[in-house]
Length: 142
Length: 114
Length: 173
Image (cartoon, rainbow over all chains, first blue to last red):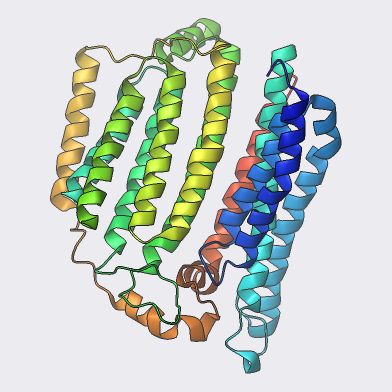
């Protein structure tokens, strides 16, 4: 966009936390109502794209960095892998329930998986979209 | 009747990939193909049910099958990955060859090979 | 009543898909594809699949449209007419024959959408909560019973993001 007004900047920055909150709600209530890791992760990415599209260039560089999103995605994936390895340590099968059998039925395992997947998908798709937005801004002015 | 419409959607996507000259339109056909398969699975999964597959107290009705819906979640995300990489490759091809048209791209590849 | 609505939605989906492939302006095709995703999200909601509806709306109508609009804009500068029209020639006749024969084979051999056995639904209704602890049975399937498929899907997404980073930030030719 050639002209980004102050109103667009402020409005997109003030509305983004509500979208992020909705994404966190979808991730954490995934085992009880429609939602889950993927749905909440994509909504989280949308909450990151909204300020990236509305803000001016300098503030976008301050708010969202490629390195932080890449780190978030890698940590999410490693968390998923660690949960699977904990399943091997507990019962011998990858990605099985590592918690002791006395507290069944419980939703801790699915909840942790949802958190890890939500972090990974949100950071991954947010990074992809942010790269595309930055690249289009470069080619607009360059 | 629904089966015929889903097959029409599938054939639309297939035709879009085969008969389009522009790369982006071929990728649009690929997205249509993906969506048609997702629609087929979800429509096959509602057996005779009239409520969503979430256990709750006090809601009457027969549940639909949750298994095709779980499979289609994966399918939608994989479709997004394929579309994203395909479009980025198409833009790279445009920057290298100057056009999105398949025949012009083939001509420029033949020229640069000689 | 719901069945009529589902059939009507499917007809509108077919119409939107056809229009998305026939318009010469790529920008209009991309917006029609976004409308297609929204309508299929509505279809998934009406057929009692809320998880798939949320995913299709967020992914199809959100992310995919963003990437398509970026691609169309960087390929023409401003949305302009592409030579993407369909012309009549021998190759196109062969394509049409191929597609029609594929459709005919599918019509003959695709199993009916009505006689699907229901034992999986009954098993998950009985044991889904006790074995996985989730009330949302779709989450119970793809995070409890088939979590390995979900792990593979995250690997696919990781590869896609890695490939995109590679192709977008390479500066030397």
